[in-house]
Length: 465
Ligand code: BES
Ligand code: MG
Ligand code: ZN
Image 1 (cartoon, rainbow, N blue to C red):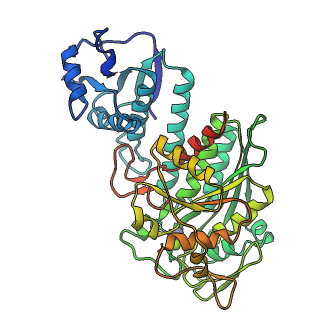
Image 2 (cartoon, rainbow, N blue to C red):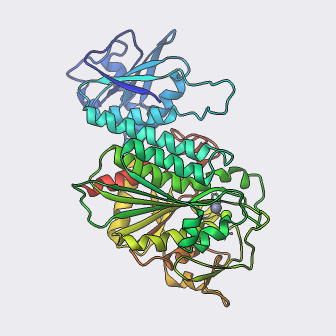
Image 3 (cartoon, rainbow, N blue to C red):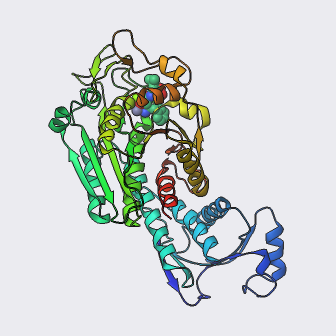
């Protein structure tokens, strides 16, 4: 990852970015490469930036009178211009603009290179900011980008490497580093807990399931009862016997643990930043395959909470493993439980890749806070209805519930299914859209985006104060 150094002086030999505001143009001549007149022109232009280039020496000037997200996007635009050409870049400007711009630049500089015979890493490897920028702000940015990279790596890893067991080991490693505890329940412990959903989905797999419990508790936590984040950890979703088609469907289903990666990333970052909170993360994990003993359409599963579920489509597996995790969550008497899950294609069809869909029965405050955090970090959420009419579709005639609803509003019927299994205040977040991209968008790469980490971190951070 890009290293950030703080320095007293600027070095004219190093390429630079000047983030300037129109209002401080008058009193200072800010740069050698641009006259005040040039900067005024830039400020009034549509692009809001310009640059000079001599060989491989660049000087950028960017007007900082833009939205937070526009500044992040600027970072990604400049990254594309320079990342293969120069190794160092100094960034000059006010603290807020420098941090936002750097965030976009660093997040855009990510590459998943593990499986390339010839590693073609970006040349850009260091940014230098003024020592006037608080080291706590720099550290927070470094930790946040590092964890987003980690989360993207998890999603980009194929199932041949990232089995359920491997995923749990990676979370445990993060726990050792950042200081949160991780307990991994194995198959026989999951059997003892009668988690029929997780075990049912796992039946077609060669690999055992895991149930990972990560706990982070600050001695001065602002909340007494924990906040619980639950992540869907389907390390690969073939659909099972209700097999998926390959193109644009099964071919990206290594990403079906992106919810798990996001909540694991959230506790990792919260612990690195020593947030004053009490946080628990639960991750039920398995792959979903049509093996010899695979569960079948028509099967009836008995879940962790004792309810029975008629399986009518083995591709609606996420809700089965999450249901067990949600009823398990109740024992901690959480103040609120939020799950993140790549749960439905319906969510992607409804709003695409630009937001997650949230719904639930928790008080409006939590939704407001999620919305606000989402807007701050530009990982936006859209609230959908959660009326009981949708629940009726999930009733079976031969079991308590069935695992699919009618043809419409599939993201909501899935959410209502999940609500049945939890007594605590609950929010369901369908992250199927934003966690995976087929083509890059600004500072989000093709493949795993790491979406959810910055959202949850900001949400938790906003609660402290
Ligand atoms: N993992 C998929 C949902 C998904 C689809 C995530 C596209 C990301 C992109 C989930 O397990 C699934 O297969 N859902 C089914 C549910 C249906 C059978 C009720 C779906 O959405 O088609
Ligand atoms: Mg599925
Ligand atoms: Zn799935």
